Length: 115
View 1 (cartoon, rainbow, N blue to C red):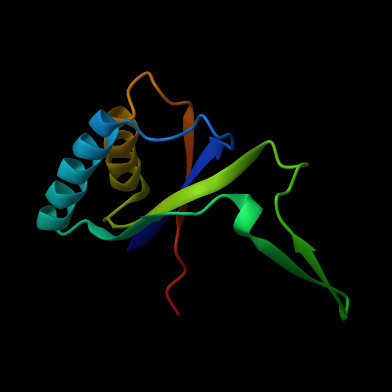
View 2: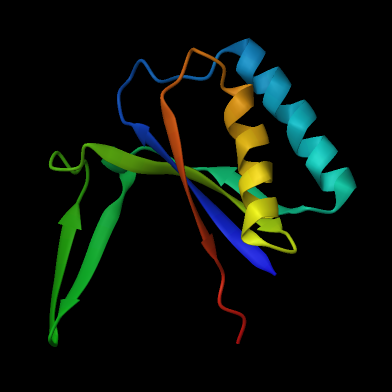
């Protein structure tokens, strides 16, 4: 089964990863890759560079970022291969632990529907 872990953070210019975080994250991602549980991962550019497209009952609209009404944003994701939600949660906890005390991070974990 596949699980998507959406990484939610507060968007602000101060939220830049430290060198320690980048080093520890690189180690963790290599570990998870070697274990065969990490299928894909990436950070995302800020919402100032984003565009929202909407279809509201056939009426299309576009909103350019930044999105000031958004208190938290998806700052990245990880796609895991796991046998259960519990295993996916354990993988996500490893990811959260790397952030230490310097970040306030939340992850939403959802199983991917395989068609």
